[in-house]
Every structure is written in structure tokens, then in C-alpha cells.
Length: 295
Image 1 (cartoon, rainbow, N blue to C red):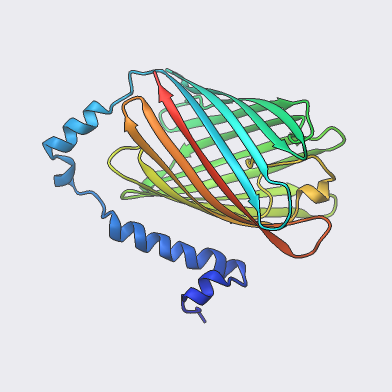
Image 2: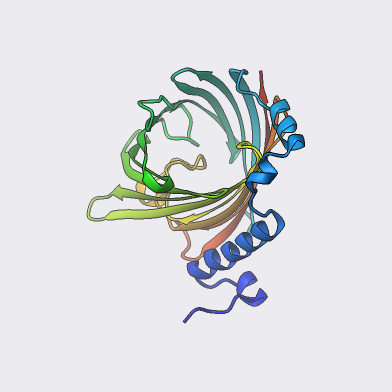
């Protein structure tokens, strides 16, 4: 039986189903009511066309991004701070991104350097490639990723890939894939992760519902999931069983093109995370903000 959505259910969540289902319903209701889908007539409006043309930045092949995130732990645990900078180069073969991450926690400041690439393989296929290195304790010593995306009929897109994390004394290999569906002004994506262990396979799952507005750079996303995600930048050294702890999260993220060359973005995220020294989950609130400049 489906439980009714009430304020009591929303703020006193007992299960993962309550956690995701309640806020997902509220998100879809709010976005659909406040921002109806655009129609062909609206898109052909001369004022809208002129505004969109003034914001067209496809001739600008470079972009710099600076972001900051802060993890607040509800209980008396030291917060986690992350500062990162990114440089984007848009080429004829696809974008290339260089990234420098800086994490600070436990009076430790560590750095990680990464490179992402999204080469186009054909008209209907492109790839994601990632490599990263770090010499500290707050990041994997080495990370790599590869994935191939394929456009499918009826507005679908699928992918298959893997992630690799090396923590010095042991390695983790994660297999992943995704299935996305474009529907009107929405993009829905589901992504599982499968991590082989000694005697079992650890499974985690993430989802995304993204609503686009007048421009591709203007959107709001609802993200959620449970389990270990290798694409999460908040990973710390430790024993393998400690890194694959139980977790579940829900986040709201937005991106807005305020000028032809300037974008602003931000995220609010709630995570229930297990600790190795206690059984119950505890709450983490993440606040992230940043800006991108294209030139």
C-alpha cells in the first residue's frame, strides 16, 4: 500500500522509499507548476530569440570554473571543505577538462589533479575518459574511468563503463552504466554501480531528474541514490569495508547563465552516512556554490 505524503512523513523519514519518494513528488509538483513546458509559439517569440542569441557562447572555446563545497555534520564531527578549479577547452573532437581539487579535514590539506575528456566517436557515440592522481590521504592515490555513450531511438541514451580507484594497499574496480530518457524539457537518468568484493558484489544506485529551461545551461536537477559512488569526490583513505559503507542522499542542484560568459551554480544536499565505528546512519548537509567564466 502506498503511504500518503504528509509533513510527518517528509520530516520523519523511516525508510529509503520515504526519503526518495516524498521529496521527488514535491520536486516534480513544484517545477511543473512553476515552470510549464515551453511551446513552439513561445520559442518563436522574437524577444526570446533575441535574448537567446545574445547569450550564445558557442564561439568561446575556453572556460574557467571555481567552486567551493562545505559538508556540515549534524553531530560533533569536523566539517569537510573542498575547493576546486577547472579549466575547460572546447575542441572539435569534444571538450577536455583539467581539474585541481583541494580537500581539508582533520587538519590535513590534500590535493588531487584530474583530467576529463569527452571525445566524439561518431554522430551517435561519444566517450568519457578520466584520470586523476594524488599523493595525500584524503583522495585515492590514482583514479581512472572510461565509459561509452550511445544515442538510442525514442529519445533514449545508454552507456557502459568502469571506474578504477587505487588506495595504495588495495584497488577497487567498479562497473557502471546508465540509461537516460529525454522527455519534453526533462532528462531522466538512472545509473547503477557494481563493485566486486571477495565473496559478493556491492550494488549502489543513483538517479537524476533534470529540468531544462530556455537555454541548455539553465536547469535544475534532483539527484538521489544509495550506496557507494566512485564518482563522489568525498572519498577518504581507509580499509575497503570502511569505504563501501551504507549511505543514501538527495540533492537539488541548479545552473544559471547570467551572462554570455558567466554561469552560476549551486547545490544543497542531504546525506545519511554510516560510520565504521557505529551502526546507525548520521546526517550530513552539503552546500556548494561556484561560478564559470567562458572566454
